[in-house]
Image 1: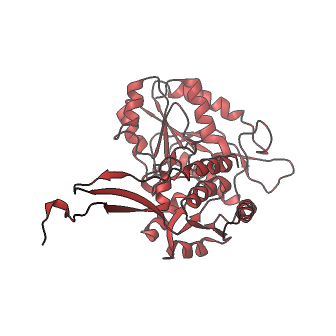
Image 2 (image 1 turned 180 degrees about the vertical axis):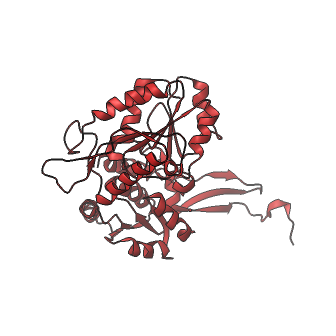
Image 3 (image 1 turned 90 degrees about the vertical axis):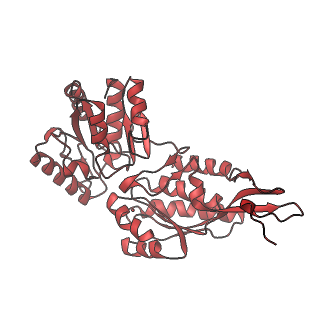
Length: 377
């Protein structure tokens, strides 16, 4: 909810900065300018994780751009969705604003109506990689500082039980340090507090449902069949008073290679660890997956950091140095590439996606010259 509050503050300031450019014209007595106009209806489809944050990223920016919203959240988080919608409705009513937001609690089939509608000018959909692959065609698809690295890895891999789109799924560590790094991570993973996410000190809450647990168990079995070594975790943790909840122990798997399983997203706290000899090999491994949302390198070597940030370095939409893959700030544009691509949300100039651009030519002279020096009449 704090992200929702922050993005509303951001959007209010943004509302005074939706500026276009003024450019010189080749024709005397003329000028060119860009103006930005609302798209119209924005369709918003969100996942169960971060149900308020992702909604607010899109809604706050779209509203100040003059658009209206039709929101289909995950049916697994209806209460949060209804609360957010009610708060916005109340704020609009207090300001005397018209109805600009509609909430639709429905399943995937009904969501396709939103995706397919020609009345919806823009669809912003956040969810699984599979969902993105289905929706996209329809809409048009060295580790150096160990302590710092360990902390960044643990939070990014195990926080929110591995259920962030930016959760760390793979660690690619230099062969000279991988054993030491894994040993340190194993000790930390074994001590992680698992339980009520509202309790102070708890990092790992429950998986969303039994299906997520079954997918995690199947992935761990497949990883070991592929030659992976389970270092720590992977079991279900019973929590008193919550027999139907699926709390799990975050797992670390040493993998001999980047298998098809490693290349496939499992929305659970599983961290695959592989090794490399030189940085070019590491970058090739890093980029050798369909996903491209968030990435990070931990290093003391500025040359390595710059290599990772280069255009032929990380191919992700978010590329970090000495900080984990999760926890993006609202001021930057949020989004990925490849199968996790398709646009940007939240900050920077992401607002442009919610508007349409017009190029305007204004003649303030008494003449009518043509462009490219063309003479007519």
